[in-house]
Image 1 (tube, helix red, strand yellow):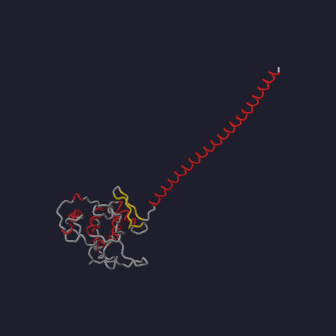
Image 2: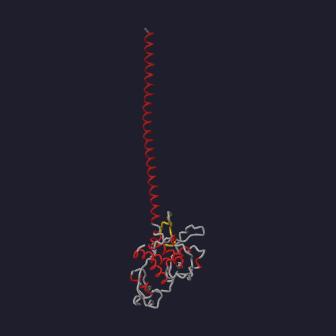
Image 3: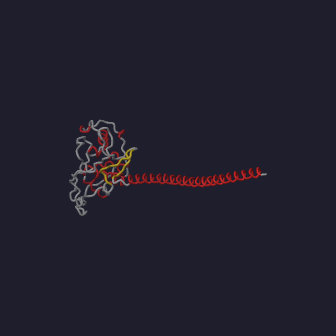
Length: 276
């Protein structure tokens, strides 16, 4: 009997110990699961935060790219397309009076800016440089859409032989344009305002009458190409000089030279008025 009581007590004791251990282990398991769940939540939050940061970084990069494009579009200089290449003309600020004319002339393929000895564009237009006789030929032929291939005779002007302008000068000779026709003009010399006007008018086949001497005080019947000058003035292609307050002086300056900025304006206006 005592033996059974002892065995029963032993079983009860062992059961109590196991129950206690099980409760302890179960409690630890619950705690472990709770901590695991908490860590899982923290891990998910970290992943979410990481994803948000990556997303934020992507948008930030996109904004930087947009800002970069915006800066390019807001360049202070005129940007033109020369062939398939975009070129910034770093000597033609957008806020200058000649900027839209240079851009328009470039878009029409009339001007492209200077090149180095290898023919690489330098991104310079030279707006203050004087226009030479040979440059005038190239620009006016381009503006009036004359094909160089249609000119295949023998050139008269010896100063153009071997020059980049030889084919252009040949065409102007064959077309009979006044300042080129006899082959005697130096193609390297700066063109005068009157030479520019007569060449522009002949390039677009614009008729004109004898001058009246009523538009400019320095242009009269004895002035070379005076009729062409007055016609161009009436059509708004050219104007006379103005003083520092913008008031007309009544002077045209027929023998004065012409800058590249001025020729860009004159040629662009001629295309608009007379057609290309």
